[in-house]
Length: 341
Image (cartoon, rainbow, N blue to C red):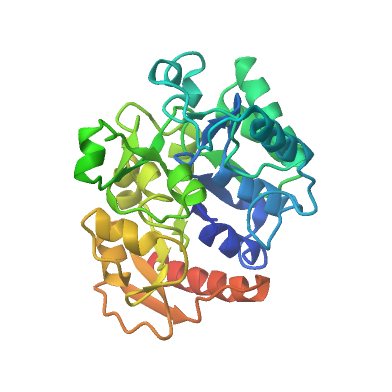
């Protein structure tokens, strides 16, 4: 049974319809952790939590973020107090020394909760507090994720891509005045996407820490199985995982099917086109195929006429509900069978 590489919302949406195609008990999901942030002292793992909450039956599917029906009293009170205290708007990074002090898992991505730029629900917050507390007790992120998966009765095996910290940082094109003022630093992906709505001119993307991070033994084992790469952002959802030592080599050694997040040169959603362009890649299905040189087959939309040098299965790849996702999952299974026998 396959291993899914997951980030953002594209692959979780695919997983939502995959249970009737791939046995959940034999399915592994490796989630991106490059988007993780420490906010007010607790670690938020958005891509792990999207799978955790959806497979646990509590995800707010309107936003594909957080817990459905959650309250936000703590978040709202933090905002009210910050207003009363006259604190400047966020995101508010901790200083450079604090970024690498204390727990290693949070480095390069620490924000103050004095201005909480991500909306965190009360039940959602409890998950992050528990995750951080267990990390502080000495457990690895893999062990903590297993504990949370048991608490949510997950029917798949959910793994973080690494127990080591990797931070996806967006380098922004700065004006001459900004460069003169010394404002040249990159911003974390969450500030780029959540804090600023992606409304910045991207110059490059960095996976800070990836050169020193390693996939876990569990991830290495999972990559020996056939792999499905869902229609997630190739740069910021899959890029951090692909930057880890040995991952690309492992993918070249196994069977891989990838679902394009594009229809020719039109992206379904998110900032994949801008980010691919900024990192020197063609923002299109052909560009995705170049990034995923390890893929043996692709699932493309029926309206996508891109000619590839690998096996292609075409279907309607838009996923508005679980029935759509099941259709795409069946196309993935057909592609796997065609190239893996």
